Image: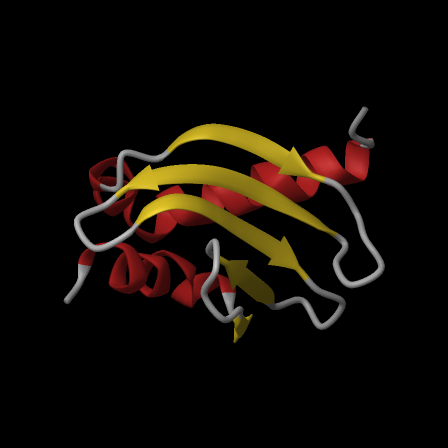
Length: 98
């Protein structure tokens, strides 16, 4: 069961994604939103799945202790040190852009 803090982190990430550009998020076909628990590395996060033009699969957006995000996408290298205002455009680049 997710803690209140984990729920708050996941909800904040989702809000930041939609505030960044709601149309982009909708174009990814984002679905299956899940709260990610705290770990040794991260304070918590949000998992969802996308059906983009360039990438289809799982996306984990994890909050680290320096108040930046790490984005994990299946077998790809982690993308680290992403600020909230960059989040939507960066994911859009990896999911949709050639």
